[in-house]
Length: 563
Image (cartoon, rainbow, N blue to C red; front, side):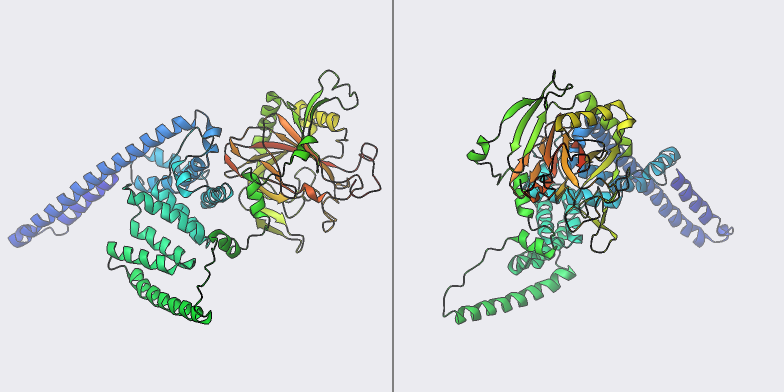
């Protein structure tokens, strides 16, 4: 309506621009053409408004159906990484487009409400983070772009497909990071869906332009040339494609001559062609910080687990009451050996459904990006591994300054024993089962992992090059780790020990426990572990880091470093 009145005001202003039209038939004739143009503009406006309302109606119907499905089980719905990515994309990009579409609408209530709600929307950084999570899941679990795009992931309930535009946006995120390996994968997927006839706001030439550059950056000149020719068939006037055509032809000719020269030097012998792993090239380009990456990802997929028959023969299940502890006499704990060295045990049915829900209820309002220090005690965590959801602040042991990294994708909160009887009861149970003193342990940490949530390989204990890691606590090093699993994870999310090839899968209501230090106080480097990316689902854990002080008579020191 506002635009309608604007158009009408233009008509009246035009008609009253001169008040002596009647003195000239010629001028009055001109006014007829002016009026005709204005009527045409008015009809165009009406059609545009009708189209706009139809678009808004279709958008509302689509979102109404989607939200009804999502609210049946919100955690499981957003546990699907594609659903999580598309949610970020909608709130960051598509709702903004809708806001612009109806910006001049008279429904001020909707605009005001949307403007108010936008302050709570995810940021561009969130959308980028969700996109990177999909790329991380793709690599870790060796998923094709088509598998992710069709939403055909293990354990999913709410299957969600990606549009060509979604694939294109994912490719652009990789492109911005100079990750040409993933740029190629997702631009190829976008192009495939467009070739199959999918309607999209993205055109083939634009997708090909990105794809062409990604292929070229990976050294495949012949493919880049063929794609350039295809681009020119669709858009013969494309300036960059025309320039690339000549450049690629020249470079290919130089490459051909160089290969011929190399062949002559080898006395006519056939040149051995080496297989190049594109991902290895990309990892070198991105300066991947973890050389154990492949082993870590294999374990996450359930591959490379070093469970031998001999090792299996040393693992048992049993009931324990920890030397007739009075609280465990009537209800001994179910224990299962998961690994021999380091000795990792799993306690079954160790935390109840009620306790899990209460811990989550207490933690949810406080979940924050993890920082370098424990917010309760102020003590530094084991740098540089304490990372959080977006770009976590971590302590660089070389510079002493806070920096950013992407090792951990989660949010966490800390619960003290006196806050609620359930927390106190959990702390007491850990003490009863382990026989270790909880007075010097850190508070119960609760963590919820994000899209593709992970915690890359790290040690829980402070190493010799980190002498001040827990100095402020005055309780010594972290002697042991207790980890509750407070949710089942349909796919992914394992706890893996990269040095020994062990993998522990989440099971709701259980907990795993291991010692980080030998009885001598020396660190056990075989406890290097990681939390694998969550492929599908919502992973909740809580952990207790137990310290040395107070354990002198409960776990006496030995004379051997590795006993």
